[in-house]
View 1: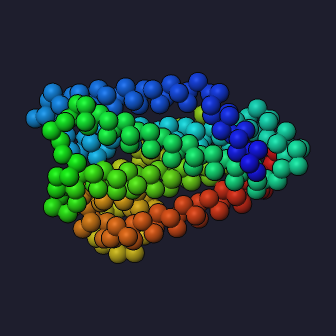
View 2 (view 1 turned 120 degrees about the horizontal axis):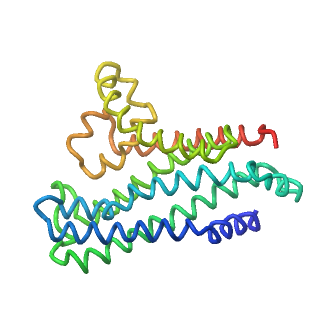
View 3 (view 1 turned 135 degrees about the vertical axis):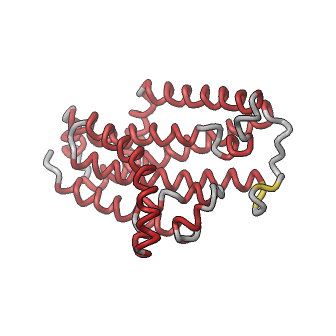
Length: 257
């Protein structure tokens, strides 16, 4: 298993896009931080910081791409046969890929969080990490909880994208469907809020769980629309992630090579 994980991490390391995408996100963070400092009338510095200067929104796309390709490319280029011929079970192969994505996603969030804090001190020195936000928590607490909520929400998307990757063999199709799903969530959420008001049980749908990060960050009166507490959203995300990953294992084990 350890060898499989090392191989998967090596594949990520050798892909040029791994570093190019991270470099692009870092550049965007710098530009947004500078913009937030020079045009404070249009950009809320607190919100910009808690969102890691826009980095978390871009990490979603990066992870969708990686999750979409980590399985489909094996089938597209026939390399999955080499893995299975080397006495590795399908369960070991898919677990190694999930662990690789977990390591990669943690690395992205930790790196961007550190960069965001550095940019705060360099570009927004007057912004205090201890200042109160939304009357409930300090800025640094809001930043860390928002990071955690975003990370969990991303993994809900990743688990579904992995499931789609097991169904489709084409890499481009998986990427496109994953991105469409991400954009569709914002549209569907608005409709679901209306449905939740009418049918209480609808609040447990997976789309509603993606509001965890916004509710932690205190975006508007989001709690009155989700009808769930932060704790319930957290548990709901974990349960759906486990369900989707279980389905990934089931589909991958039955998939024709």
